[in-house]
Image 1 (cartoon, rainbow, N blue to C red):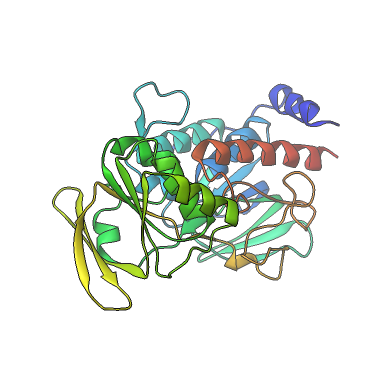
Image 2 (cartoon, rainbow, N blue to C red):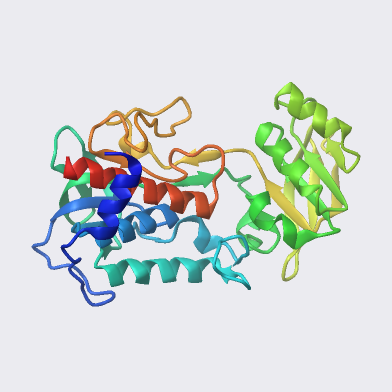
Length: 333
């Protein structure tokens, strides 16, 4: 069966999903499901919608703080279907309600262990043990942070970890980018479309980015470099206004104006829980074998947990759809 056929199965399966009242907790004795989804961001919720709509008894374990990275985002302008944009937390609430309307069971509990040695697979939370004939891992990734108090204070108010998401909000402003690898250079180059000037702040005296990326950055008149420099503080009132830079060789500090600070020092996939159970690459990202399936048959992955390139809400949702289609084929076969 091709992917298109799997989609047809999802759209036309005769058995209707069993619907539960919105927000109703699962029965205490209900621990066995067709599909268990770990994570409740765009990938997890989309997978839940598709699996439930296909008639599968589906559980989402959302963790203690459901919604993924979008709950820390203010306005989302680039998710299709919202002409005037939508607040990140509101988008996640709408996705959750849509899941529940389809009959998905959602439990706000944190997964502490898994057992993928054989099906049905076991997923343990702090309070319960669940079983699933198939599992979708949608735990996402976490941006590496500078570790400054100001990051939390001005998160969503000038401090960002995604130029594609937030760059258009800072037209004709002075923007700083922290980092020196390919991600930082790519972010900085993209931001030159909007900023008056982009300052790359790097702790070393040379970039770690690939040669071609460096050449593009050095040739761009809008990009300036602050070598051997770290960010030591972030200041502002209702939003970021200034950043304190510290020269790591001299120790001298300088306060510079900033309309925004983009931190691009990498991401950490949330996969520590699955180490030794499925194949991960050297950076901890899930390795996919066939389409969305992991190294364990019946265990799938969707979203930033394997996606090192795009990291967008819309692509994560697309990966969630793909994983659900693949789960349908797996369970049907």
